[in-house]
Length: 627
Image 1 (cartoon, rainbow, N blue to C red):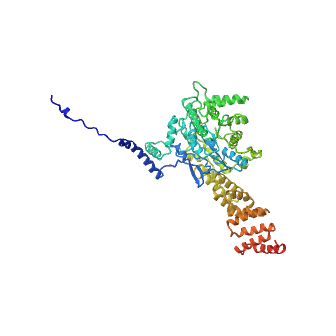
Image 2: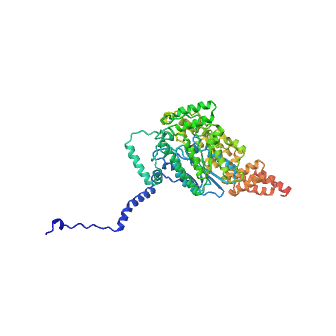
Image 3: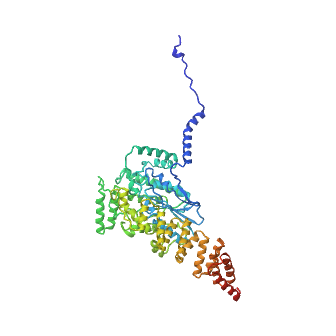
């Protein structure tokens, strides 16, 4: 039987590729991705999201840009208090990190009014031999996702202790289940995205999407008000709803990971229970459900119980009203229950701030807060004290007697708090913005918000420039210092400089210019202790010279000789140093030594005032006494 045409056609021979061909085909996309990432890094595309950056050759701060890992849709991102610390921890170092949200950061009193200030001052009193570093890296409008993301970098810096005060932002803070910056409710997805955010390629893709999104979007962006008010996307989260439960689970699981990281590294952690305004902050959003009454109705019942003297009943009702508040700007009571359980599970101390403050104040209200949850200055002192007591109780302070004096307790807010009129004005303006934004009132445009202020003084104007982002906190304090100096308000000038040095202790320029300015103003008594601090920071010809000269004027010849000789070693041609050194030797009746020094003074400056007369007196003393 003859073959058909179809049978005569030969099947095409399948081409076989070598094994390496398939491997290369798979690897090409990865190669392109890696090449693009390297290219973007070489050209410094996008923000640098490294956790720590240099502020000097030997000191780190938390990178102000690191918040962009958590805020991808927000133009203005929060920065920390910019506390610096040594790159290489000193042998006598004692280092504490503080993590959390805006309350931990000290809002509205940041960067120098948070509870870490209290702890720092106490540590410096009880262990002065240690190099104390309390580094507050809390960030406004962030939650446990940020704490978990920062934790490995914190542990790398060899901390002796970590303090965590967090929980209020679990719903609306960055990446929270109700946040405008949410990536969904899956922790796996969020954590993968956080990992990918460190790559430049991720930034490029995100920027491209944002660019094209803006082309087709006519929505007007809101730029006024507080960051948290802009973060609350899924505004209403009813009590015991699915989203409510997701937020609690998110906090629990993230904090478990945080405590496991610390435990594996052998770093102790103190958790703090959180507090909020119960008595004087009515629920923001009140809606009854089939299961529960309206929050405002329970709030009124609580007030009635308090008026009848039923304080425990009232406290329970206030807390229930807060739980029923559908706008979760205050953490539900369940968060503190989780904190206590986690402390027990990981054998981590818990500073029971809520219970301790309730014992002292009863149900907390405006006496403790400036709003719904941010403590006032006294409140921060109290929180710091409770953390401190927990540190002492658990023997986490390297001191045989880690108890501060009662005098220290009484003097803290006035003597040891580096906080000026400018800071209090900035805080007052921040509170005005807070109270004139959602949810306290209808949101307002930026220009309308700024019209709420009525600056009457130079300090008011400087504070407003900080609020309007025209000046940094540091610039404002520098200008305040110059204003006081120009107006001969020398104590206020020095106080502003000391505030700057408390925040930025590594800037020698502040020491140098302040010393020169106050010496020119003949403020010798005022500057004396400051120059000694300057010497402790870095011995120089200037500070040793003036410690010596002022000591001589106080009649302390031994100290004068010690420091004038040091200054002489730095600069052997300073006639003023030699003249005063001769006077100091003369005071000790070492006339021959004094005569040799005054000869050097006259050799350098033959016309130095009173030097020739002093030489005659010294020569006569040598002839008479023979010394």
